[in-house]
Amino acid sequence: MTLEEYEKVLEKRKALLPLKAEERKVEVGKELRSMQQLSVKKDSDKVFIKLGSDKEKRKGNIERDERAKKSLSINEFLKPADGESQKSELIRAAMMELATAWPWTSLLLLATLLFFLHNRTRQGGGRTKKTNKGLPPGPPGLLFLARFLALRRSIFHLGPLLRDLHARHGPVISVRLFNRTLIFVADRGVAHRVLVQGGAAFADRPPLAEPGRLFTSGARDISTSPYGAYWRLVRRNLAAEALHPSRVALFAPARRRARDALLGDLSTSSRNDADGVVTVRRAFRRAMFELLLQMSLGATLSPAAIEEVQELQLSILRSITSFPIFSFFPRITKRLFRARWEGYVAVRRRQDEIFLPLIHARRERRDLADGGPPCYADSLLALRVAEEGGRALTDSEVVSLCSEFLNAGTDTTVTALEWIMAELVSHPDKQAKVYEEVKAKPEELSDGDLEAMPYLKAVVLEGLRLHPPGHFLLPHGVQGHGAEIGGHAVPKGAEVNFLVADFGRDEEAWSAAREFRPERFIEGGEGHGVDVTGSREIRMMPFGAGRRMCPGYTLGIHHVEYLIGSLVRELEWLPAEEVDLAEELDFTTVMKHPLRARVIPRT
Ligand code: HEM
Image (cartoon, rainbow, N blue to C red; front, side, top):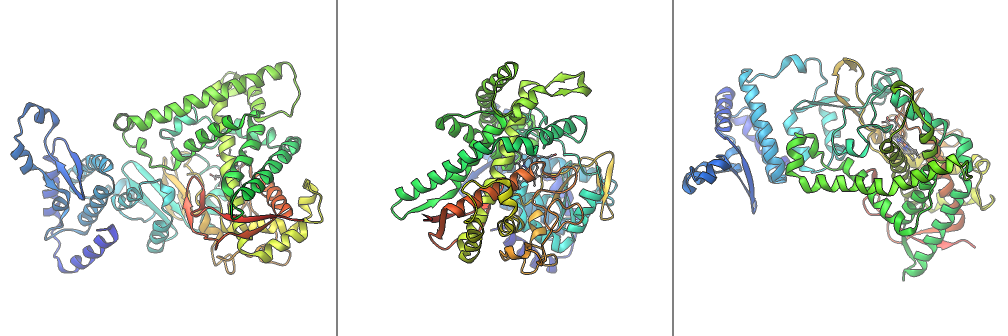
């Protein structure tokens, strides 16, 4: 039975049953407390909770039959009885969903539920009014958690569930999960007040769990580091050095190489395929990755090495969106999920093995004042942390920052490219308009050429509005002792999330919001002159807004415009089959069915 089906049954039953909540709660509490140790075994589709400690079992103190007597199927255990309160029902529903979704998680969560119910019983079964007072409304934490775990992925998979919750509870909702408070903001005006008008109040990041700490040298990269002097230092360095327009201009030859390699790759793949069809994502990714590798580490690697580094970086990204098991009781979970933890450690070790020689080579080149455009690693090696006695960055910090540069700039850009090409393949008229604009330009598109192509720019903006690569921002944290959102209290330590995709698709801000209409960004259109940084008003925010806004947004837009312009200039894009715009979360929100297209060189 799915949770939805179960909820329907509960709804029906609720109307019939008299409520005797306290009696039932005490019974549940007793039953749970009587368990000294829980183990959960999934046996075909039945899940059993076994009672009694392992030690006792080893000693043979519990006879087989006696243990069997103490075992009960989770369905039995969770079966609602007469007099069930709605809350207990929801908790049971949550547990049931968990149990059928993931036995290991159930074990952990059952243990936590024990703790939770124990505390509730001690407090007379009441809610902890003191801590919850003033929080935005929201669903019971366990029910939310059950659904979240049923997805077995990260919080970023929650789009549809969140939309449902916002419809019920309003534009700002909160969910309390044990010691964590998650806030979700689905209103553009509120987001503007929080991110832009709120100044630094929400510019922090929430504390980072593993394996995030492992991959960021303990939150020492830009995106995870707390709001403060170190964050300011590394962020300013990125903006003033590697992302400075004069520095970006020096990488024009690298961009050209990436474009040529991409066009070659697509043409060869289409020639090799019997139907002349290419699946574009892999080729886009390789081109972007090679370019950013040049910009971050100043390195050109062999194809095999690039392949390996790409895989390492992908596994780091996926660790961010996979189920955050190590944020629950890390000491225990690192033992329980030893293989997974050791896998992460091995990835980080291998990343050090590959990145460090490249970084050391840059250090030597710098000492010798050797040529080549200065890369991001060069600026990091020259950086000094004034607040920490003027020390240089550690090797580990440099690796994490270069890794962040690669990850922040590759997937986001590739995802934007794929969605935009998908829209151009399904709208040949709009592709033709881009071609009309670009065909008069030289093969190598300069910054000036791109500035003079309003339709291409409109296509890119429309792609970012309708298909923002990130459907959420990175979670924001709260400065000081807490803050306020829309009249509700937000405690220190809370994670604040924003529903980016919903903002760009808001029918109140955009006409025919679900349709791909680049014309809206052309002079006279409703979106002409839109402020993509959201500083005046948020109508779309693919790069966030306020102090934590993406520092790489101009580079990201530049790469997308340059590559879309070049791809349409050199190749005609035809559908291989009907383009399916279904979405799926990878690190970014990608096309569930990767774009396949027939590409024909333009004559
Ligand atoms: C189309 C391309 C890109 C998109 C859609 C994008 C989007 C985003 C978003 C939504 C955020 C989170 C903002 C927040 O939490 O409020 C972010 C943060 C960030 N992005 Fe980008 N990004 C792109 C390209 C890049 C590039 C090319 C770089 C650098 C090479 C970059 C570096 C960063 C960094 C360092 C942060 C963290 C900022 C902080 O915490 O202070 N991004 N980006």
